[in-house]
Length: 335
Ligand code: MTE
Image 1 (cartoon, rainbow, N blue to C red):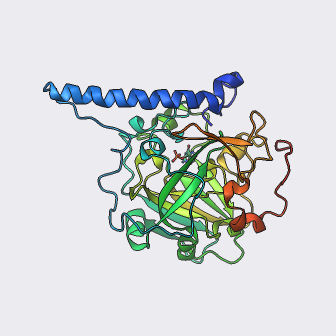
Image 2 (image 1 turned 135 degrees about the horizontal axis):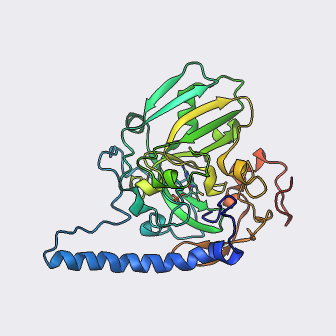
């Protein structure tokens, strides 16, 4: 999505902006990263007071550590693919609050302090309440789930997330029965997030939403960690969503507000580019993005190109929610 920049800056040619381009850069970036770390180690050996710092060192020191690593829930497996290497999943990110043009987010997260953080629960609820995120994480039963992850830009990975079902959090929020949708808002800290300061054309803070039956689906997962440890900052610390049957942008990072409503709320990318990013945004090879095909995807780390699966391979969990989802190759979203 690095290419999603609003006019008047929307000038790029397709070749400049497609996922293919970012793929080529990704491998180069990882290689440079390796050299950088070795270089820093060499400086250290020469007596220079530099410590190496990398994408796996961005887990906040004060993140709760109880419950990690959590037991894997074997109901969710990804038999056809290898687990993506941890360094890849934490080196190649989308987190526009830090930068929208680059995937190299982790070095920009240094000023960001995810803890302490609170989540305010508002809208159609029995009673407004506020959760302290660290306390929430400590009181939930954590489990590990290996999920496919598919970005709308046609790159994909397989990640062992740690967390708890979104339905458990919603139960604690006590929404009224007339709530039809739930809206999530991400943290808005311009002083710690340079992308918010520099990209003033985006409608900060980041916001997303689900239908209630989507949010209550067994797959919908609140993520607090990955690869057996708390979340690195660039992956959405302190807490984000993983909705593996939807494109990655439906899963907001660093959530600070949950609101229940009786109308479909707007969402960040859908409000910006409705013909490119729908409200539902289920992974579907039959609905091409207006500027690229969604029929295949490239796996992070191996660069293997594989067919995209409907609902990202989670058909049996979610197909009943979407009787109208196209099952044959069709056209992009229409007005
Ligand atoms: N949440 C916030 N707050 N800001 C973002 O820019 N990017 C989304 C999603 N959640 C984003 C966000 C997009 S486009 C993707 S693909 C995933 O986060 C990326 O998650 P990852 O960096 O852990 O792979």
